[in-house]
Structures are given as C-alpha cells and as structure tokens.
Length: 307
Image (cartoon, rainbow, N blue to C red; front, side):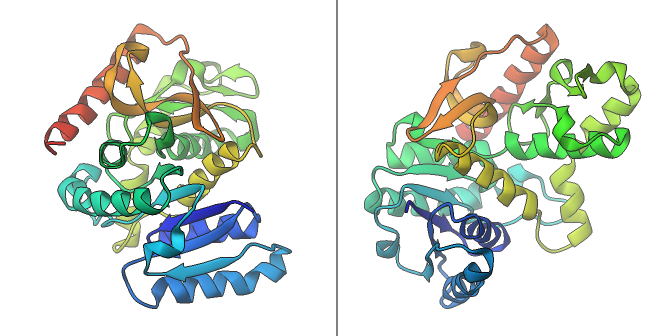
C-alpha cells in the first residue's frame, strides 16, 4: 500500500488523514510538532478503520524519520486565518513554517509528491519547491479544486441542480483574484448564462471568492476544513489513478497562458509523477487578462519573500 504523510494535525490535516484512511487509499502518517496530538488523533482514526472496512495503517508522530519513504506528502501545517485576516496576512509566518517542513520532508522522502494546502497557498507552493529543489511537477498547490467545489455548491443552491450536473472551473491564485470561468460553466449542459441572470452569477462569484472568509467569520476561531480536506483527497485519487480528468491546481508555469515563473491555478491532469500535463484551454480576453492579473498578484507576494 502507498504511504502518505500529512503534516499538521489540525482540522484540515486530521480530516484529510481520516478521508484517506476511510477510503483505504494509503497508509497514513500524521505528524505535528505538538506531542501527543498526532498520536492520539491517528489512533482514533485507526480504530475507526474496521468500521470502514479499511486496512489502512494510521500512525501519529513528532519525528520526520517516521514519515520516510512517503509517496505523497500533504502540507497543511501553518497558522489559520482569524476574522478580518486575508490569506496574504499569513505570508511571512507561514513561510517560516513551510521552509522547515519542506526541508524535513525532502530529507526523508526525496522522491515524494508534495501537495501544498497551507495559505497563502500559491506562494507557499513556490516556497516548498524552492526549498526542496524538487522538479516542478512534484510540488502542486491545492486551491482551484476547493474554489470550484464552492462555486458548484452555490450554483446548486441557486438552481436546484444536482452538483454532478454542474460543470465549472475556477482558475488563478487561491485568493481574492481567483478567476471563475463563467464562459465554461454549465448546468445540465446549458451555459450558466441561459440558466440564471448575470446579477445572480455575480453574487455567486463574489460568494465563491469570499468562501473561506465567510466560514472564518462564522466559526470565529479557525477556518474551513471539510471541503479543503475533500479537495486534497480528490487530487490524491487522481495521482493514484483512481480518478481521471482535469482538475484546477496551482502549478509552476513556464509560459503557458502567457505566464512565466510563478505558481497559479490552471487546468491540469495528475498522475503517479505528479503533474502530468498543463491543459491550455480557450479563454475569453477578459478571462485571460484576469488570470494573468491573478498570477501577478502571486508574483508580488513571492517577491516579498526573497527566495
């Protein structure tokens, strides 16, 4: 069975570990700096595995040596947003955490694929790649899958359509400048513009962009974790070959869409090597401009880090 390390035993990391174990996708190692927390949560998940008919081994640790030989490492470690904070406010604090985590992962699992969940996600993916020296294809950021799921859920709420009948894609950075592809959004095969009004769609787009902040505001302490964890597992299932298809993920671009040298969300296919292919789809001029503007916002944040 494959081995997946989840770094960070907070809500996102623990829920990710639970979903991996529940689906018997791989053995899981949950690691955190807090003593007892990853061990206790991992044991709790492991004791549920018989009820899920899962033979996954789930262990918790504070020692990166126990994560050695991982096929995939999911990095969720970092400070969570508080009400009033943007993802970008976390930049410098989480950069320090990401550097430490990425170095440790690279030391013991030099052939693994890294999935970055920590916010601000796009710059953190770039930090992880720079620190590890891994090929770009093996460091991928999770954001577009989550943003797309949020938009589909809001469209379902408005139209009554089953989410499986709603096709959408959100590109760009995982932040306020994310780019919902309205020209590609369909409900039961019909373009979204033929189903709801432009005003209604604009409200959905705004709620999608504000999706994380809305949950932070409601929780008061902590941030979203069920949907981020499910989005991460969707990527894992694609890497493992359990699912196929195109996903919006944050990857390092080398000229695609006229963007070079920065991580941002675009349509990709994933596989055992990590990133298989970046898909260049036809965008409207407005969408392409918005995508490039979103990428430049990521580049500006990365520029503050002196990588």
